[in-house]
Image (cartoon, rainbow, N blue to C red; front, side, top):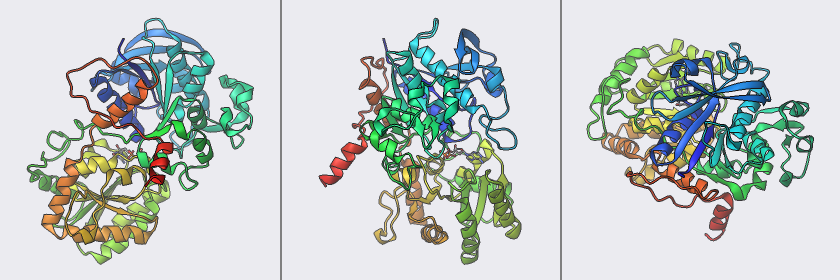
Length: 516
Ligand code: ADP
């Protein structure tokens, strides 16, 4: 029997997306399936998801989940054909938002909503008629965090993997609510770290449940796996993470290289490739038009495309932009994002103050994101912490050179250009250390200087476009992780298999560092 994996997640593109999680779950599942592993996704049946799959087929009724009864609907992802099971519980999921209402307030029953999702996963692992029993259940982020615990409570044979996509969002709720969702009282009290309690600073934590009960824990980049063991990046979970360090590792995300390919992308003005980047000029013209910027073909055009939040340092970036505009009379900014109201307002004010040089679109717009990466010269991607980050990977594939914080996945995926090298070497972008306006300005000035040297710039662009951001290596690593837990193996396919180096755990890396 081929290795069979059930992904459990609250979002998966194109059925539902709020950020990188939705991209990852879908792109990774398709790549894993292509490598010969039977893969399916379990997620909530949001109205937009049901609409996109054209109804689907009800396959099982699940009674007595924490939120009541549910129905599993079988369908396939519209773009990749990956099998998907949608958990239909309309009283919980038939809403416009994934997690929040239209005023940005978290739904008050999120605990019950996502406990139901996790309980459905555990039922499937236990055995549901008409659904193949998975060998490994792979739960993603706090929404699916109760899955490994519920699997244990159900005594299933399947093993569990839990991936942390962003430790800042933990799903912490009043402890007293634990009884409602079926968590035994002994797991809701403060206990020594190795005791598997899901109590966390007087709350019950879905993130902690995933971390302490899964057979393996991963994060979406190698550096983030190390960072979250420290106070600076641990969001108070560093102690818990230390207690599972021997089961913790980092696997850097890939991207959907078919959807994000400048040679075939139907959403951009003109296609181009690393062999012939001429089409990028037309994309730049289009981006300038779309964002109301002056049509200057040689002006350095900087894209910003992310949530406008503190995590993404939008506050610091907004303060840095006027300095950059004053120091370089040609530089332009195209800003696409949405987030905290005061930061959105600050960006709008910049556009009003600098007409023709700053263009801002507030909102979430997938098509505009493609145009942004295709048309810009550089991407400014500041972050206080970044588990992996996908935006910089998209930008690099489109020959848009990233200027980013040296944290997490940004540091793992961008190779910094150092001026004293004088040559591009293998550099693909620019990194900066601090969370300050000066840090941003310093790195931007380095990149603007490089932009003024066309042969150097083209070398950086080429390096960035040639970076392998495919899923080949991460799929091989995850597969190795799964097969360390179960005897099942992937079916042999004709595709070339990639040899995965062992994914080092934090403990291995510490030993390696000590050994020099
Ligand atoms: P995060 O998940 O922390 O928001 P990532 O870089 O991992 O950051 O993923 C963000 C994803 O959301 C990327 O696919 C990015 O292109 C997309 N995105 C973010 N903001 C917008 C926006 N305003 N419009 C379109 N796409 C966006």
